[in-house]
Each structure stands twice: as C-alpha cells, then as structure tokens.
Image: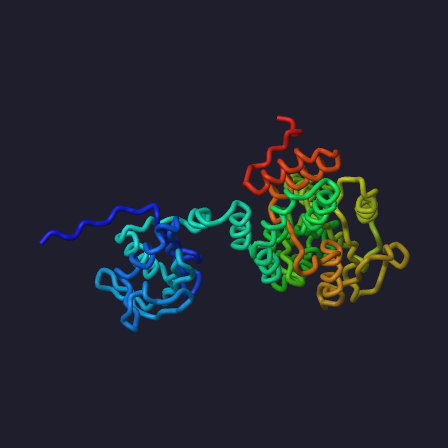
Length: 406
C-alpha cells in the first residue's frame, strides 16, 4: 500500500524552537499562523500527532488552557503540555533534550509546517522595535536588566515612539530629551559595563579581580610582569552586568613580550567604561605610581575613562601617609576589607541614576542614533526632519552616519 503523500511546507504556518536547545529541562516550540485567515492551521497540524488525556482534540480546548497529553511520531511517544496562547498560536512544552525536540519538529514538518528560527517567526508578528526588544531580552544576563527590557516589551517603548509623531516642536524636544536620558544604560542592558583594573606591576591587580569575581580567574604570582595579556571575567553587581579586565602592569621595560602586553593594557584602559587604578600602599610611591595618578587626574576633556583610585593592601602598614587622594577606596584583596565598598563605588560611578519604574528607555544603538538625530532636528526647529527620523526609528531602518568619513 503506498504511503500517504507528505504535505508540502506551508508558509502560512511556522514552527520555531523558542528555548536554547539542550540547555534546559523543558523546551518550548511555538506553532504560529502567519495570517488571521489561517487561524485553524496550528491546531489542525498539532491534532495529527497530539492526543490529550481528555481525548478531545486541541481545537476544542479554549485559549489559555493547558492540555497534558502525548505526542506520537514514528512509534515514539513524548509527554508534552500544549497550550493555545491565542487564536493564531500554540506552544508545545516537551523534554528539553535534542532528541525530543527534533522528533516533534520533524513531525510538524511532516504535517506541512515550515521550520524557522525564533527570530524569523517573531518578525511575522512583531514590529521592528518589538523584534529588537525580543532579541535584546534573549541576551539579558541578569534578572534586573531583563525586567527593564520586559517592561519596554509590554508595548511601552513602541507606544512612546509612536506618540512622538503627533507632537509639535514645543512638546517634542523635551520628550526626546527624556527618552535619551537613559540611553547609555539602555545599551548596557545587553552589553556589560567594562571595568579595567590597572596599575604598575605587582600591586595586587590579579588578587583584587579574583576577590571581585569571587573565584580565581586571574593568575596570581609574586613576580612583576606575570600578567602579559588581558584576562577578563563576567560578574554582576547589584543586578547590573560587568566585565572585569585584569591587565598587564604598566611600567617601563625592555622586555618586548611584556611591552606588547602593556600596549594592550593601555588600549583596554582607553576603551573601558571605568578604570580602577590600583596602588600598593604597603610600599612607598614610585615614579610609575605618580605618573599613573597624574594621567587619571587629567581634565575630563581628555581621552581617559572615569577612574576610581584603589589603595590596596590596607591590611599592611601604610607607606603613603600623605600621597593618597582623599577619594581613594582602601581595600585588602587578601582579607576582603573594603571590597564591598569598592563594588558600591563602582555601581554608583557608572549608574548614578537608576530609572524609575515605567521609564521609557531605548535599548539599541540604532534606536538611540535615530532619536538623537530627531532631537538635533527638533532643536533646529525642523519638525519634518525630526518626524522623519522618528519614523525611521519605528520602521527598523538602519542608521547611517552621514557625517562619517568614508
């Protein structure tokens, strides 16, 4: 007897894995109708393989009702929970292993569903701004940053941007200022703030970064010049993501390999959001210490990042009675004294103003650049250009810096 003809992939219904494969106990697959006219397709495709314990087909279950049952394909049965999340979408929760996920996806494909990645599927039902938010949320590394982005994803950010198009110049300019106020924080919701631990060799940089990270990530050895490359570690302080970099000690040396490490250290310092200049107060200050202190106390118009002066080895007798700046944070990387204060100082320095709940925050470089262009146009009393930039922000247009030199 000939086997039944396999349905061709239907672009009007897609299936996508929403969870990282193999990384959780439960995987979630979403089956979605691309158009309202195809609202019955997800349930009809699922009814071909899913049997609920009640015996009723999924199409007879109301939206929002969890249905426990079995997914049978190729003589293999999987325990699953199925839910119609709205009239056009169904989610299947199954065992998180690759084998179970692949069997269900192959079964859906056999019934005519097009298998796509979650970004492609999300683009079918979301605006460009919503899609950016969904992608950003998937990159969140802390609960605090995810919560802020989820609040924007509730429709708040898109609605705020859409409302800008209805404002006159008098209302538009301050509203744009409000949106851009937390733009740097918005970018760091998915990208960690970069902190570099710097100083001359053998002042305890590696020991301090280990104390901040809570585990031994850097090599600790009592010999100047040990760290010759940039060693990084990820952590979170007060719910915010940070990347800590332990760099080669900065000093004058003839060792070519160490010189290369020092150059990398200088570049890392210049690109950081914050530098922690570490001084060893158990030894008298050196010319290298004084040179580094002078560098980080330059005018704010310089290229150096904001800095915190850290007086290390506070558990030993102080050999810097008059030379330590008043705002230095005294710590002992060995005993842990002052480490919590240093963490609090880092957070306060980089995030001095936490946005109140319900604040609208742009979360991508593209959004921020279009909003900044709209603000510049509004300041110049060009309402048409301002609205055009806002429309480009909403439409997902790529920002091209017309002032950049090719």
